[in-house]
Length: 99
Image 1 (cartoon, rainbow, N blue to C red):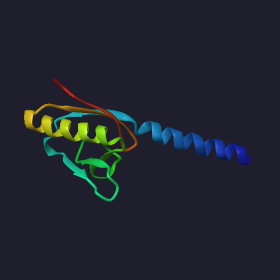
Image 2: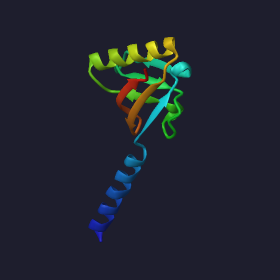
Image 3: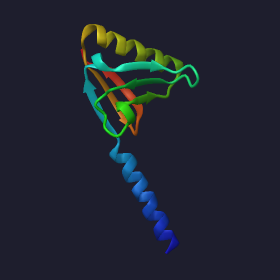
């Protein structure tokens, strides 16, 4: 009986994580772009992503990836272009700007 409970708990966990994977493609004009010095992650807030506090998504990546994301969001804000983001949970997996 114990193994069935563990398997069911694992299944529910995987289902919850998978349900929070997705993609957004929106104008970043109202996003807050933030960099925390104490953990060096780049975060955006006020996206349309449900299930993440304040619509927040975090980019955990290399310094170069964070620099590219920061630059891409600022460029998209300036040019009024949409930014696309693939995410899992509240973490950014991939990003792009519409041309």
